[in-house]
Image 1 (cartoon, rainbow, N blue to C red):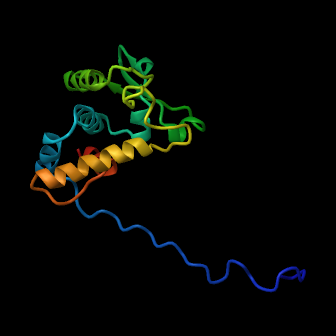
Image 2: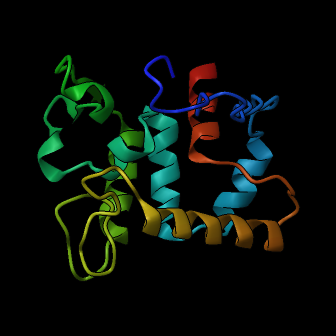
Image 3: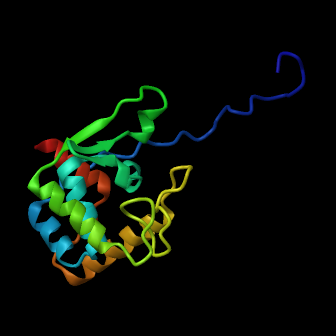
Length: 167
């Protein structure tokens, strides 16, 4: 504007994005049990693993067989992996062994490189971090849970992570 190239400020009067309101409630135990009663074996194992470990969705969907070691499950958070190189180690417990075995048993005939993969054996999460196939799977799961059980409010993986943080 000072140089005379443009006559007005292009960012003036732009609409500000309002912050998303925080969730004011946690997923209750009875809601979780009702939802798990209609979950597919894959989603059942996924939810149990979230409740036992609490990593982000992308980190759990990227879990590979090489991440399972004698001392536990090693997860390198994708969000901070490039900058810090930190790894999380979730020590083995009987429940964690059972959840991982259930996830392995739920896989289709075409076994992919990750613990959770599509029917074709491809990871649910792509290189850019999008998990559109898994989002569809989760949406259908929530639709079925609301239709076939007594609870009314959807929940997300983030809500389940908050449930883990409470304890």
